[in-house]
Length: 130
Image (spheres, rainbow, N blue to C red):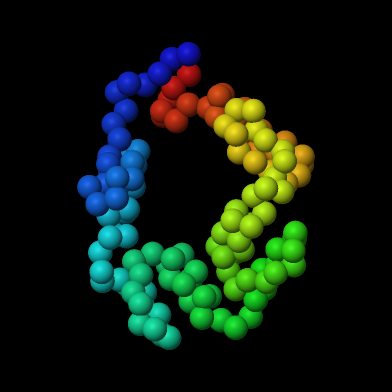
């Protein structure tokens, strides 16, 4: 298998996160600034990225639209639901990926996950690589 040893990675000095391009590195750096373009009208917390702002604003809602399929507990955000499922129901995940040890509750989800490994093996991220 050919590799691309000339590809640089950019490491964030503040959190150690590795990024593949200078543009994504610069975009990542904005996460660590205190001033933000988006300000929460409820608590005044500021965000540089709209997605994080939107996620935060949902945390102030009273509606709990995200339901756990295993125990029917409800949550305000998908992030909270995913955290609950990882912490509470991890032992229910009996389907294990033989490649990366990721765990799944259903065989259907495991099969969908396995497609990722197939695509990764076939795909090269370098432009014009054959």
